[in-house]
Amino acid sequence: MNAFDPFSDAENCLDQDSSFDSNARKSSFFRELHNLEGDDPGKSFDTSFDSSAFQFSASRGKAPVDSSTSNPGAINPDGRGYDREHYAHATDAIGSEAENETTRVRLSLREEMSYSYDNLSRTASCSVEGIISVRSSSDIENKAFYIALGDKGEHIKRLSFDATFVEEMNIQHFKHQEGNRVFGVSVPEYTDEEEHIQMIKYSCCSSLRPVPILIQTKVRIAGEFCRVGIKLRANPSNKGSLVNLAILMPVPPEIDGETAKMSRRGGMWDSMKRIITWTLPQLRSGETMEVQSQFEFAAGEKNPFPPKFPVLVRFDSAGVQLSGIQVHLIADDESLAYVLDLERSFRVVHRKL
Image (cartoon, rainbow, N blue to C red; front, side, top):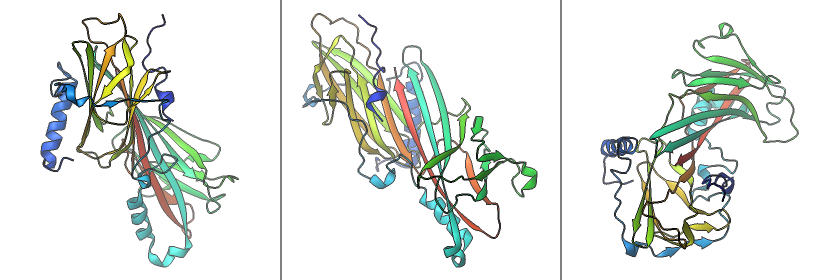
């Protein structure tokens, strides 16, 4: 029999509580985080299971490719958010008199974090990477401008860029750019209008470990059943909502996935990949989501030790980012009025083993 690899197919399946004040919610969140990564990772998780809660069976079929959202404007179809506030400030800086003469430079700053926590060894790994792209248009083709990249938090560990149209400049030639890195950009002609052209890639230091979500799991054997609890809590300090959440739970071989009963609707059982998937459109700052599942053991497979149920959670957020990196625009020709239209967003893939 082949070894059970819980995440071999998982990623292929994917392409407020107002009664609390803000400080109380933040303190509670970080107490839970301390318990999670301390000696007792489930200390703050209510592990009591109510047998009457398991009312819903998992739907059969393939796991969805992506989750939907009740707020389509939060994330564009290409997965990038739109930072309207940044755009408004940039427009105000230009002045209304030049409104019809401005050239929009549309950039996107997209970051992705991969986080993994091993319950057995109590160890975690985290990596954050980012891509800065420019959206091609006839307005900026064959025109030059400069990008100033600020990193006061010293988050960037490595950086690379496409030398075919991006060049790092000597900051001594620019005013008020001390501590920044400046890049000259000359957008080539592209036949595909609105195409995102990757300019700069970077990876962040291991010291950058943002915590946008807390994930706790518990497994219990109750008679002939195996019960699993999953609790998600968004950090009250999050500046934006978490959207397009997808929760994937691989089911180990000793469990009969066909017998799954759940405390909430929407679970999808993929018998080919042995994965149960839930989707959630949105989780606002400080909000909590819980789901409990109950299974029967496969014939002859029951043992006194709870089996392992690893969990993978993926989500997006728009208008915000994970690092403190900043992007500013410097026009090559002062007679031209450039407006920066910056889209900021991030995606997180969180694995709990």
